[in-house]
Image (tube, rainbow, N blue to C red; front, side, top):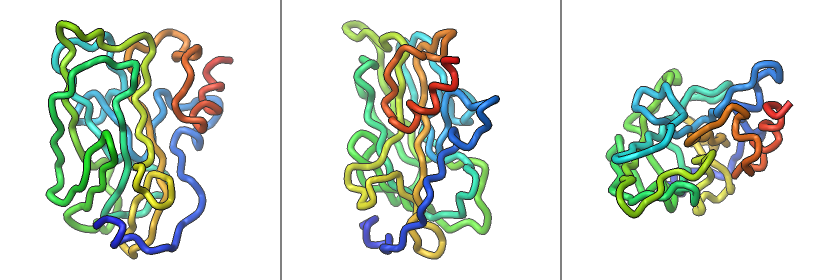
Length: 199
């Protein structure tokens, strides 16, 4: 399916949005080319004390150097620090395979001539009710590679059928005043960047 549209050429050089920010003014929470948000407009990556119905929106955000693409492949499994009941998931493109928990591939309707500011991909819905504790402490929800991605990375396919490597961002539950500095990051790359905030 999605693999069939990916050719073996790989553009090297991981495009990591958070890492290219200046050390004096890094972005927190870290953004990637695909980032989970608390709202469909992509304005907040933070949820304080999640209760009741919780929506997580997965959005392709404009990253430096990322050329127009017509598809992507990633996953975003629910972190162990978020205790909630999975209700369902919806997708904003007809051509999609899998889900965010086990690996999701999406083919966009067209290949744009220029990269839009953001593209809404999917919405996951959870419920924090009786019997569920919600988020424990500072809790990171990362976008990571799909287990079925041949390159082992978050993948995009550009308009020339070339594989482009992307990076994942994170949503944070219950951030503290120290940017969750004491919480182990789920991304080794972000672990290096996060050290900027502990200083």
